[in-house]
Length: 306
Image (tube, rainbow, N blue to C red):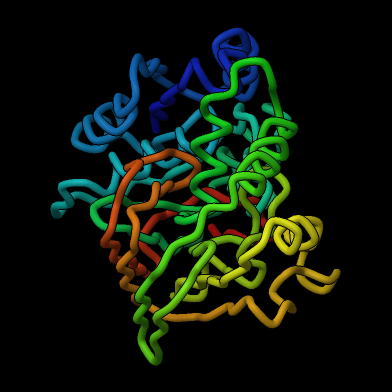
C-alpha cells in the first residue's frame, strides 16, 4: 500500500512548507510507503487528488489545513466511477485544524500518522453546496464575511485572526433578506447568518452548529436574525461555547435544524465559504445536500473500525 501525500505548503501561512522535513522524517520513522506531491495554486490539490484516485492510490492523505482537506476530498469525489473508493486521511498542519479537532485527530504529526497506519476507517458524511463538497462547515451571511475579512489580514496569525475578523464583521453589521426551505419547513425574512455544519466547530473557536455530526446522515444548520451590533457582540462569547455550556442556540432569535436538503435565496448577494475557503463572494441561490457515509475516513480507534 503506497500512500499519496498531498502537501499544501501555504497552510498556516507557509509554516507547512517549513515543516516538510519534519513530515517526511515522521513518515519514514513510521515505515510508511508514500509519494509526496506539493500543491502550487488554489485548486491544484483537487487535480492532484483526482489524479491519485485514477492511479489507484489508497490512502490519499491531505497535509495542511481545512481548505486543503476540502480540496483533496473534492478531488477524490469528482468524476466518480466504478473504482473502489480510496481511504482518506489528514495530517493537521493548518491554522485552525477544525476537522481534525472535531474528529479527535492529533495535531502531533507522529501521532496523526499512527491514526493513518492503524487502518481504522469509518464512512464520513459529505455535505455539498451547489457544486462544491465540504467536510466540516459552510456559511453565508456574517459568517462568510468573517471568512473574507480574515483571509485578507496579513499581519495577524493563528486563531486571533478569526476573532479580530469577527469583531470587524460585527462592526459592519451586514444584514440580508433570505428565503430558506428545508425538508419539513421554510422561513422568509431577515437573516444575519446561516451556518451549515457536518461538525460543531469552525474558525478554531466558534461552535456555530453545536449539534452537527458527520455520522448521522443529516446536515444540521443554524440561522437567525440579530439586527444590532450590541446584540451580536453579546452573542459572540456564546458562539465560542460548546453545547451544554451556554451556546448561542439557546437565544430565541437562533434556530438549529436537522434536514437532508436546504435551499436558500439571498438578497443582496452574500459571500459563501466551504471549509473556510471562499468559493464565491456574491451568490444569491444556494442548494445544500448531504451524501451519507460517502468518504472512507481514517480515524482514531475510538471513532473508526478496521
